[in-house]
Each structure stands twice: as structure tokens, then as C-alpha cells.
Image (cartoon, rainbow, N blue to C red):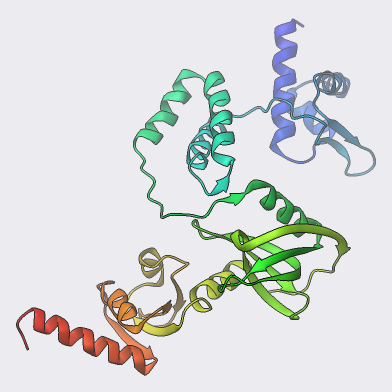
Amino acid sequence: MTVEATTERVLRLLALLQRRPSWTAAELAAELRVTDRSVRRDVERLRTLGYPVHAVPGVGGGYQLGAGTRLPPLLLDDEEAIATAVSLRLASGGTVAGAGEAALRALAKLDQVMPARLRAEVRAVHDATETLVGPGVEIDGELLVTLARACRDAVRVRFRYADRDGAERERAVEPVRMVTTGRRWYLMAWDVDRDDWRTFRLDRMREVVATTWRFRTREHPDPVAYVQRSVTEAPYRCLARVRVHTEPDRLRQLVPPQVGRVEDDRDGWCVLVVGGDDWEWLAAQVARLDVEARVLEPPELRAAVTRLARRLAAMAGND
């Protein structure tokens, strides 16, 4: 067998190992149409090149591609390469501090080795896309890694946290999940001192330390739903419930998740829970949705809607 054929087979073996967590020798041999002995030799070739291929003995064992001391070259198919390049372009303007520069460096490396046909497809997607985002808050990448590991390993985290008034207090939490709205990052965690679930904005955290105190994961609410409820209700002085005559999915497209929460109702209606700093602003925001709506609560919003209607009628000369 020629060197070129052996190299091609080793690359195919690498692609298979990257496709799923574990393969038996027989499965790999069948995919590559070689013997088990050839598979073992090719695995050794990959190890020589720096790929940490682990052999798991026993029933159900096989070969696994693990993590090593350095990052070996990755093998991407066409769809993976396009998806990675497009994601890196988007990440270059993201809200993680330092990620933009790292994303541009990685994109430059990928663009250098990408075939011309794929490079053209990526650039076509990029040229046809504009990103509309509001001002976001940059988060340190090390903070994300620290919290992600704490969530994964179920260890307590200590940090200083600034409330809305700017006062900082020491907090100890059992982290569950991070959630991003696109503009801000939040951590859902069990607050040890307050004995309850809490949501924390990552940009208000200081001196974050992952401890060695392991905890048993509690039954918890859905992190996305919990964080959305927290960010749409807790920060605002005014909170309202409005019944809206449209499909829930359509209303979710009109109302950002950090602004309002949409609940399913019946007969083509849904309920919008939305917060704001004053009733007049809320009345105007609901009116501009351009859908049939009924105020459920509170009376203050009904009064604000009545005042808005009178002002608009006067503007139209119908007073």
C-alpha cells in the first residue's frame, strides 16, 4: 500500500474518531475496510502525531479521542468549516472581552487553509449579513471559564456583587447555569445565605473564586425561564399583564426576551408580562405592537392607556 493511501486512511480514521465519542476496533475496521491490526497501527500513527487516542478495555470499550497537553489539528468537513467561519465572524463583534481579537486570529488561520470554494461561500454569507445589536456589556473570558467549570464540577463560588444601588456584598452560591440574552450574561445559582434561587449579572461580579466545596445539585427551575422571569420583572418599578390577540411565537419575535415574557393562553390569544419604569412608557410600547390587546392588570396601566388614547385622539383632531 502506498504512503498516500495510508495517509488518506489515517485521516479518515481521525474524522471517524471526531464524529462520535467511542468506536470499537471492529466498527472502525468495517468503516475503513481494513483489519483490526491495521486499525491498531493507524491509531499508533495518530498518537505519534500528537492525537491522544485512548483505548478503553472490556465490554463496550473501544477507542476514544481524548484531550491532550496541546491542541492538535482539527479535521472539519465542509459544513463544519462554513459554520465555524461564520460563527467566528460573528464572535469578532461579541460581548466577551478579548474574544473578538481571538476570533479574528482563529478566522485568519481557518481562512488561510480553507479551499477557495468554501471561502467564497463564507464570504457570500458575510457580505449578505448585517448584525443589528444594541450596546452590550463586555464580560471577561476568564470569568466565563471559571463559572462554566464551577457549573460543570458542582463547586461553590464566592464573589463580591454590586446591587442596583452600587453597594457590594460578599455572596456564596451554588451555580447551575449561565444564560445570555445577547446583551448581558446572567448566572442562575442557589444563594447559600438567602436559601433561595437567585439571578446574578456577570458584569456586576468582582473577585470571583471557585472553591473546593462540592455540592449536590438541587432540583431547580428551568434556567432560561427563570432568568427571563427575573430580568423582565425584578428590575422594574412597573409590571403589567396584557392579553394579546396573536400567536405566542409571533409575539416573541416582536418582544425581546429581556423585555417581556410571553405566556400561552387560548383561542389565539397569549399573555404578555412586561415591565418598565413608568406606566405611560408601557402603554406606548404595548400600543406600538399593532395587535389587539386587553390590559389584565394593574389599574395604573389602564389609566395610562386611557390618557394615551385621549392624547392621540387630540393629535388627530378628534377631540
